Image 1: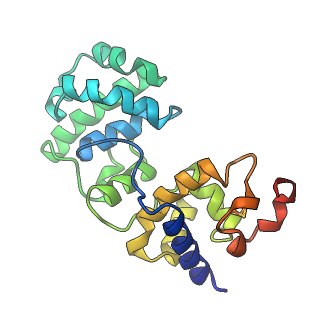
Image 2 (image 1 turned 90 degrees about the horizontal axis):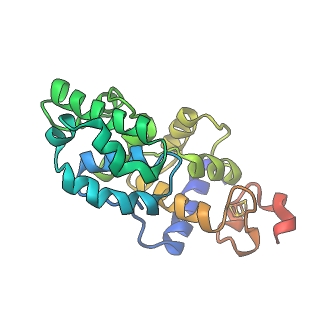
Image 3 (image 1 turned 120 degrees about the vertical axis):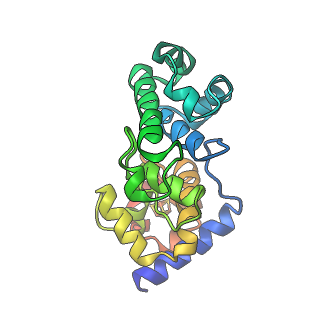
Length: 214
Ligand code: SF4
């Protein structure tokens, strides 16, 4: 089985397992997704989803965020942790969006990664979920599981992104990454993969390695 064939089979099996794959962070537009993703660093998606409705009501657009008192943003996002750093980078990011991109969240990966606090992972999320481009979000679940499945041979996020882009059907890559998050939380967990109930057991390169979990 080639890597492309294995990737296609993994995509198919995860589609069966998780038919409705969506981003777990709730947002209405590109700016809200950027901010929700920034808040999700070392924080759960559930917690972020509790905080963002109030935050987006108080600051409804990029201009409101750009002119915000950082202390007020800090208060609203406090429960997400790292709130001082996150508040400053959100306000800074919005100022750059206004200064350099006329108030519109840019629509290319190259421009998105120029924004303060935005890396390739976040940029790919926006490119895929908002702008509909083929994207690979190489987050911790994606990197770990792709390695176990034998789809990638690196733990470097950029290399994983490039390797997956080389073997995944572009139309499937974005949703595949969303499904990997669900799969990584439920079955192929970091510490104790549940190979005994794994729908990908038959195509996984490391399926035999976790016999204690069978
Ligand atoms: Fe993960 Fe085990 Fe499934 Fe492989 S067989 S994907 S290691 S849970």
